[in-house]
Length: 515
Image (cartoon, rainbow, N blue to C red; front, side):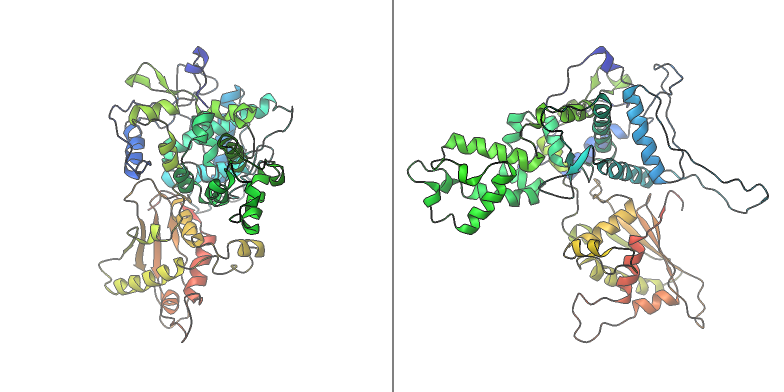
């Protein structure tokens, strides 16, 4: 879907970013997907030059007098709701209804001795954007699960002649603007939003359907697996000399898979013509892809996608660097010499962890205090236990009922669940960082140890702004680390370390910008 036509009204958008134009060009590599290094350079090229990441006018001031907006809240959830309502308010032109922070007065206490901290930083920012999209996709009147992948979400399309109200369209527009902000600030697409929505926004319908099979397999393996029977058996389906139903290669099992796939596209396999021409196969393939990826036969004509596209393509002001304004497509094309933005979007949305080695190989660092040489030995045992823990699928424990049974069953064979939880605890995002040199650091220190007293392990401290975990060594942690594997026990045998560490991840309290 091409960007909306420019207008004078759009050029003075109340939501502005100071964005320099990138002049250097980078060719797309032969594999059809830009590299993480190129992606990070594209983002940092403008990000490092900004004096303020976002400049938003106050409602009681003239639009020419841009002032940064500072949001204070008591939790990340409150921050996310404030951000969502603020963007909606800027789009609608109405003062946003921000959440209240309510306090209970305790006037008889004159001195509490409690010191309050105001946190900020990258961890808090990542957590806010993670929470805002969790809030967005839970609004079932706007979003629903993707038919091909239940971890991704697509708009909830109104059927028939029903159209969205102006208020609903403005909500979708705000969602589109937040998707663009997430991409610019974090160098990645939101984890809960389907890549096919953004591809439908930035590509024409013709370009969307022409995306190669290799690209589909790379960006959405779950959808490709369902599409594969239709693609694999093309030569058996398209045959002008033989009825496709009489082909012995189309076994009952294959026909069942084909029937389920075309059924998603509102097609009955039995209603297909006996002889399928090349053009008919192409039209059917487009119809199947449209329903499989987006659950709609023509989403480009819907008010939902048009509103998301309008928000996604809101003009981002280039300030003193250029007299013109840019939208997301222009930002990409100014930097990359690409025929379409698909390789860029593909990389943005392919930062979900799919293999535990994406964390284990070169991204875990274990630091110790030089004054305590015995901690090097502790850190090494801890590393061995951690690697073993991360290599196992699913939840290690239900954490005394904190994790419901349906969630335990759903994640039973998930090979990267634990790695994903570690990322979330240490960075406040489930996505791999765009910086190829990212690290998660485990910092070890000695706690006050009374070896004559039975102790429990001290809780880990997850510092999301620095992707760091503070580990305090005491007798309780020593007892967990020195537990030996029982004779004959396999890799799925649960150690005390597995129980303890998993509970830490599931209930990890984030600490922001505090050393």
